[in-house]
Each structure stands twice: as C-alpha cells, then as structure tokens.
Length: 98
Image 1 (cartoon, rainbow, N blue to C red):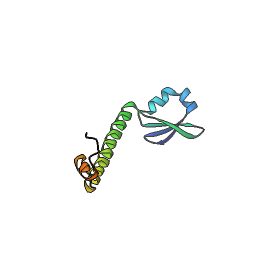
Image 2: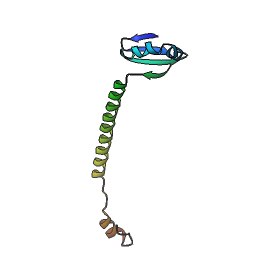
Image 3: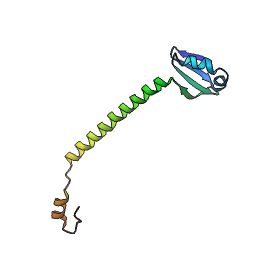
Image 4: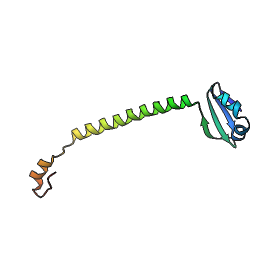
C-alpha cells in the first residue's frame, strides 16, 4: 500500500486479496485507488461518501437539465411557431384537427 496523501492510498489488487481488513481501515482516512500492474483500475470509498457524491451528481444534473430547458424555452420564444389554427388558415384546410 502506498499513501498518496492523507486522504488517498494506492493498493494493488493482489494486496486487496490478502490485506482486505487493513485496506478497509484505510477507507476511514479516504479513498483507496485499486491498481493492476501499477495502473489505476478502480476506486473504493466509504458508502456514506458514495451517497454524498451521488446526491451531488443528481443536483448538478438537475441544474444542467434546468439550464438546457431554459435555453430552449428562450429559443422557442425568439422563433415564430404557428398554432394548429394558424397553420390551417395559411396552409389549407386539409390538415387533420387535433
């Protein structure tokens, strides 16, 4: 196990198999980055930290989707759309009533 900083450690997958209990103790300090052949393959974090990240990501997603919706709404306001009634007047009566 290699300590990167006070909140992050690097652990090889083989060490995870043999030192599982010790690595679980490291989770109390912060994230554990799992490596295979010295390349990162995953991250283990405490469940509560995971839930916090998940809530944060949901909030960020809601913010982004809301901003996209507002942008589209403004774009629609700027462009001219015809109602069904207006379309029938200008394009003919062969349109199906909704």
